[in-house]
Length: 413
Image (tube, rainbow, N blue to C red; front, top):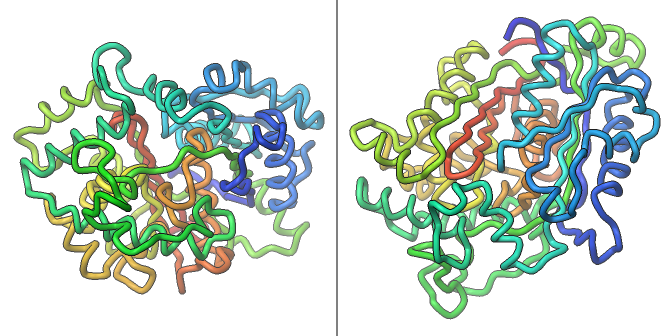
């Protein structure tokens, strides 16, 4: 990237909370998350130049649009600032991060606030599934199914199995690692969950089939929550460091990114890749773009990764697309310990979407926040030793939108 974009700090809510049961809504998420992020970043609201908000379906879950204005209503000190809402399904947060980074790199603004929110547990599971299904092609795919996204990702698993073969034990082990990581994260939705014997196996009693070969623990959660980060350019960051006593060489920066979009229908994407090396070539391209822009040779230069695992098959596929395994070989790096905390590349030490939770609009922001904390040694009980370079991979829809970022300690890789 042309100039470093510093991640000065941020905050997230407890993803185990059910906000509607507390009598709270989106405005309350903003009112809690934004001040906490500003305080963590040691930035006053008067220093913020621009706001970027990410959210998928506020109109459906909460009957509320105009979230750019709602964040100002929740935090009056931001009144008068430009504020824009971004939507790219589950990758909404990452597109907001990229827009804010572009604002900073262009010199338009010195400080950007990015905040993602999603209220999802205020409706039934069936209704939530229908609302989330709008990120597929409504009326053209996932027809006649109870839960659209498990069905679509089961189709991905089926196609993966057809091309390469797929052992459910690999998916089960991926989930087991994710939930184990989440148990160390005090903000993870499943941190206190118990899993009886057989929970990650092909056990119809404790781990029943949801769709296709995907079982209960192969599927992510419905989650409420918010996450925010404060981004800044070099000029502001230098003044900030003098004021706070911070060492910019020890702070986090976004060093590279990739952003690509494929056609909407899953069937069309799979047909297009029939004679290609990767199941989703545009995802591989987005990751390669991020490596190139960050000056990295590839996955071997990384210390940690936060990847999109709303379903176990999604996680498995992404391991291949970041270069940790060859196409069709993702299961091998799951089973040999490569992605565990002490492995070759610890993946989702936070618990990922599978365990930490997936409040859709907040996820991409949360990934960058977790990565910034990892590379600065501030990740607490789920810290990876000596982490300096992190990758995030955020997916929207059925791998339609693909966004990758490289977050590093200091101003370069």
